[in-house]
Image (cartoon, rainbow, N blue to C red):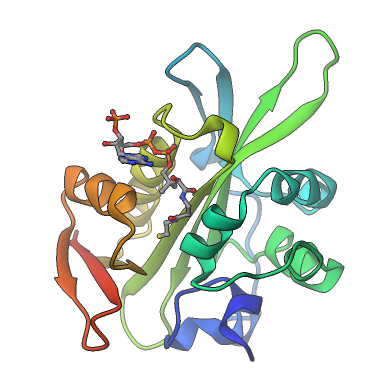
Length: 203
Ligand SMILES: CC(C)(COP(=O)(O)OP(=O)(O)OC[C@H]1O[C@@H](n2cnc3c(N)ncnc32)[C@H](O)[C@@H]1OP(=O)(O)O)[C@@H](O)C(=O)NCCC(=O)NCCS
């Protein structure tokens, strides 16, 4: 399966999709819902994704610049591929057992319309008690602390899930995310291909 379809980082067992690891889904993990206010006052609810989020996810992907997409997926994944129903369906119906996707939702008080401003995911690896994490924030809402907060919440999830280690992979020239991971306590190491960097957090 091409790596981008499963949205993980390249080279990991997790790509084949969480359903292959454990077919038993668990109920909605409401304990991972939190409220947070962005730098300029925009309130968001950070919560595990739900099946009915698919249209919101389509709109979210429309807000991403080519650069943002490249930094996240290590390639220029087209909008049509990112928003393909099969792909978003799989993400929105994650089992909450081996995979937890958090979205940051803002509800416009005037129109009551919801918008997803950022997404972060945690995929447990098949072979050990570790997980891989990644984050993505809508261009218009970057630099307001949301990426950091989403990852902070994922660390809490990982602690609750009694994981022993979190990992993330990013391009070597993706300095913003390296700064964020360092601030959150991850250690960084250059990978063999020298094009990417791995962030590791022992829990
Ligand atoms: C990385 C990403 C998730 C960060 O989201 P964000 O909401 O902008 O992050 P934050 O606002 O929490 O930024 C935290 C810090 O990172 C640094 N930072 C963020 N964006 C930066 C940029 N473009 N240039 C330099 N530093 C940046 C800053 O130090 C910032 O802190 P400050 O604003 O207090 O100075 C977002 O930029 C994104 O979606 N990037 C593309 C996808 C990606 O790279 N994902 C990571 C793969 S694991």
